Image: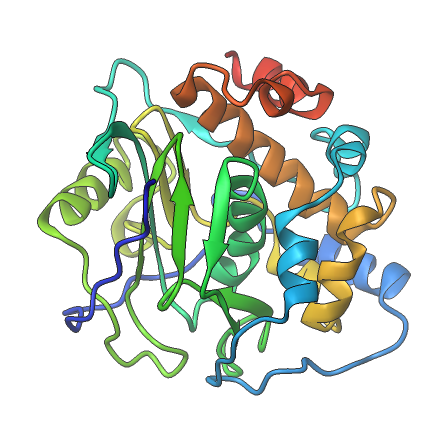
Length: 292
């Protein structure tokens, strides 16, 4: 089985967090006015972490197939940016805990980052279709950044097992931007090569190397959030997780559309396994959009 490998050494520097190219504050304000009427507070204080409940683990780890298929890649309230194809790149692989050579997925982010907070929802939901997380903890993004206190999770103490892929994660800084984990030499090399203007032409200067960064086997890349974290404002983690079964929720649509894109990219890595996931309507719609 493949397992998340956590790093405990401090990282030398944090990276800027951000969206790819489509930040639309006006759209988010409109969405919030239309869909978030009652203001509530997140159930976890910024910077604090606790184990998620069995109920929440089931809600984020077992989203109904019908919800994935109903959403597909449609998110009318908040645009969702597809992963970027990394053409003619060697497949990224790693050895699983059982010694099997499997496609590797690398995540790099930070606990303070609101864009990472949003992307983790989609990544956890997508990866849960190929394996299982244990040790996920609750987290909220920085209260002093944009989209303050965005409810999310942290990978710091999490493990992931799968017979299809290896997943490694780095949370480079905590909610107060203190050093937390550092990438391996390989992970740093991937960041330097792929989280760059060579693959994302809009990146330059201070906007280079944004987070979150997700390398899907060197075949598809995500730099910055797939959707605006502002859509999660005013919601508790429990509300978001419980709502993942509702394909009519604008929050669910953003998360599941992003998750279907990631799933389609992972299915390319696994050779279409598992079949019930990779041949589902929502994933096929995402694969078509990605040119797979």
